[in-house]
Image (cartoon, rainbow, N blue to C red; front, side, top):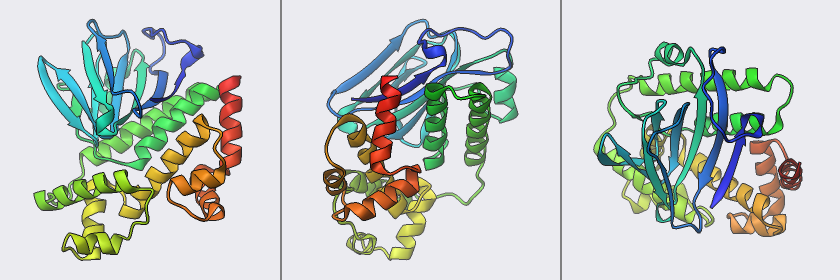
Length: 288
């Protein structure tokens, strides 16, 4: 299991903020690799709020006494003192991001962005921008640079703004055929990201034109097929850089690139650092 989280004041103990309008307490991600199941059960909930974004696979939630499967592309919102009972399975290749927050104006802030409070599940769609915002909040909590709490509230508001836009998108409805084909392709790309994938050949194998498939995939998933494949490759490269001593050349090959120089350029373009510098910075942060 891969875990990477940040906590305010480096404390996992939640609290209820009485003075500030909004305060971010923690943010991070869980991704299952070897653990078969990751369960969470808080019978009395927590004193703060929690927002969970299912980025890959699916989550199994018990909400209002019902067992509900929440697929990737949705968020689950827990209010203070609401029972939290859910689990993720490794066989689903699951990954989720979370943020805990509190403050005396939370309800008003959520209302401003038209985030509904009469249910748990928010149909927000998939977006790499979501992951980027969660990741940046986590990093702010880990690094604690000057003004980090102000940055956290701004990032969280940006997340709510993006959620509002995606939830209120008035584009024409997506056909069930397009949605099914996009989800099928997403699962295939996630399981074969480290292979040589031709979008043209994949579309032809499903009797679709390349242009139609690209448009359908982007409409349903939120990014192009190649952007999705790249995100899978970079995400898994990050995991290997953070948890192993495998060379950059071997990591490049393991995620689908025979040319380590090309892989390094792509990694730097997406993460702002070379693979070697990324590994060094991560270990320095983890150690100190």
